Length: 132
Ligand SMILES: [Zn+2]
Image (cartoon, rainbow, N blue to C red; front, top):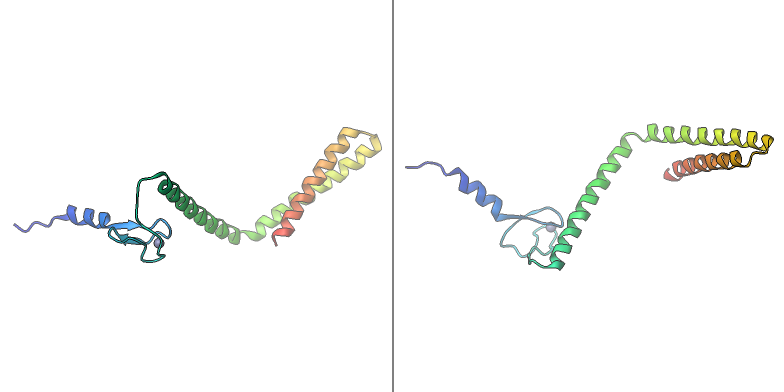
């Protein structure tokens, strides 16, 4: 007689709410705009609407990624900058060493490689210190 109808309730609940594409707030299907951020929820199947939805989804994902990156950076800032510092110093050091050898041997190609190494080292150190 009074068997609980589980299925229709859950289905109805999920169908009644519509996630806002801008902020992810669950709104009622009947709402014309988001209760939280006031962006339009009216869906019409057109190219413009598709572009708008894609834009919102991409922006949302990008924001999530930014947050995740920030968390990762704050977790290991010392370790990372130390690694970059070592790489920069080693590259510059090897570059200077190769450069002096190239100068004594009058080797043009070795000199170019050395300049490249020094360049990489300087760029690595520069990005390290500009991040701070
Ligand atoms: Zn919203």
